[in-house]
Each structure stands twice: as C-alpha cells, then as structure tokens.
Length: 346
Ligand SMILES: [Fe+2]
Image (cartoon, rainbow, N blue to C red; front, side):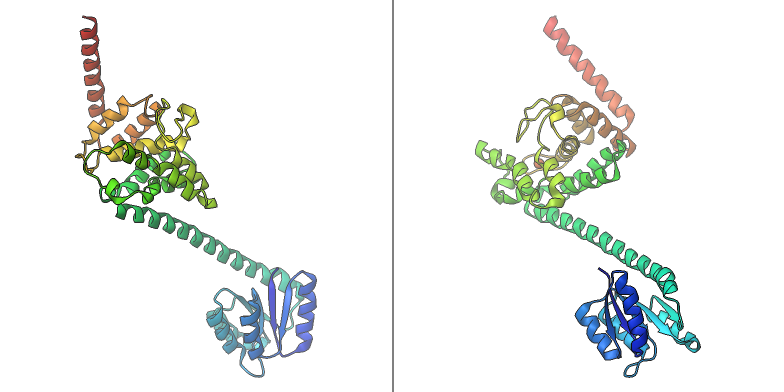
C-alpha cells in the first residue's frame, strides 16, 4: 500500500486530499505543521508527500531540505499559490518531484502528477533491483576469490574457466540468462574445495587414493553448499556434474551423455583446458595445441564431441591457435593412427 503524507496548515485542504486518496486505497497521514511532518517522515516512512510551501513554523522549502536529508527516496510534490513559482523552481532544485498550484483539480493531481511520481518510484525500484544483482555478483566473486587464496596453484583458474565457458556459451547463442548462469557457475565450480585440507590441495607428490577421493568430494560439497541458497540452485547442479564423463566413467554419479547437464559439459571442457595449460604443483603446463590435442582425443569418451569442436573454434577466433595448427594436428594424428593400424595388421 502506498503511504501518503499531506502537509498543509489548511485543515480543509488536508481533509479533501485525504478523502480523495483514501478512497483510492492510499494510507494517508496529515501534518498541519512542518515539525509534525518531519516526525511523521521518521515514524511512518511515507512514499509520497504533498507539501505546502507556506507553513506556520518551518517554511516548506526548509521542510523539503530536511526530508531529503532523512529520506532520499520519498517523492515530494509541493503545493503553492500562483505568485510563488520562483520558489517552486527552487523546490525542484532541492529535490521536489513536482509542484501543483492552488486551486487544483483532484483529477489533475491524480492523472498528471501521480503518473510522474509513479514513474520515478518505478525507476527507483529498477535501480534497487540492478544494485541487488550486482551485490549477488560480488558475493559470487568473493566466494571464488576466497577459494583461490587457499589453493596456490589455481590462482586465476576460476576466472579463466569462466571466460572459456562464456566463450562457448556465446558461440552456441545461448540465452543471456544461461550465459550469466554459466559464467557464475564456472567462477564457483571448485567452491567445494574449500573443505579440503591445504596439505592435500597443495601436495607436490602424487595423491594417495584416499586423498584423491577427498578431492573428488568437492563436487558434492559444492552442490550441498550452494543449493541451500535459492538463487544458486541451478549453479549447484551444474557444479555437481562438472567431472562427469560422456562414457559414464566420471564422478560423482557416473552420468552418461544426455544425462549430464548441458552447462556441466561445457564447464568440463573449459576446466580441463585451463588445468592443462596452467602450472600445477606436480607438473608443468602444456602448450595450447597439446591441450587441444588431448581434448580432441577425449571426444566421445571424456568430452562432448560437438562442444569440443565449438571450443576449438573459439580458440581459433581468439588466435590462440590457427586453423592450420588444428589441420596439422588432425593430419599427424591420422598418420599415427594408420601407423598403429599397419603395425597391428602387418
Ligand atoms: Fe573441479
């Protein structure tokens, strides 16, 4: 319900306005003096104020400035007589939404003035909504950064994986919403590692089976952590399955082909590529073309064939590799395969 404060020393005007707006469903308050108006602003937090310029105790313009200090969002419509138009321009400079000149028709007030105020209220709401979205994004980034501080060898990993995933999603013309979810899920994909001991996470020697199992649990830990928050539910599912394989030999649920969420399949490729092209505690980075070779070798077993092709295309577009590099790679691979074939059959 919209709350309306009417400030005028003429009780007759107050009553007329009150009756008119109460019928229309507003909750109204009346103040005959400036000080009373300021008290009601604090106490009732109205959305809209009709404020007379000539009040007996504090001038309307002073009341306006005081209201603005206490509440930046409230909409204020000044009420005045004909000879005070200069003051009204001052009032608009001081944050009044509009002014009306006595005598005014109630219908004019309702139709013209309120439409303007509604538009402003709506714009304010939109601004608040966009601020909320950016707060949400900040939380996503903070969580991802916290994790990366813990794992010395994955600095910048989440952001790069997010960029690769978004490149693939855009190449596929996914919707804007899917691209955003893809980007955020990729930023958070290893959030479940937050529960893993530092000595395992940063171990230089090969991991024992038990340690490897603890690392693998990051998929379900991440899922459990994120699915509590309603706005992270879709992200949680994508993250849970980012280590599944097309052939069903992945984890945590051995899902195959179409059982694996589509965005998880994109994430798996982006994640593997960045892992291969980054230094880790136990090995040096591979060159992009070497990493691509492994992605191509994993088509249809570890990775989705179509998505690997799309990813390679994005890398060509970004000039990480050239089409000739890829041709050579496939050609050499064919020669190696035929050598094996000849050996096996010769
Ligand atoms: Fe992972």
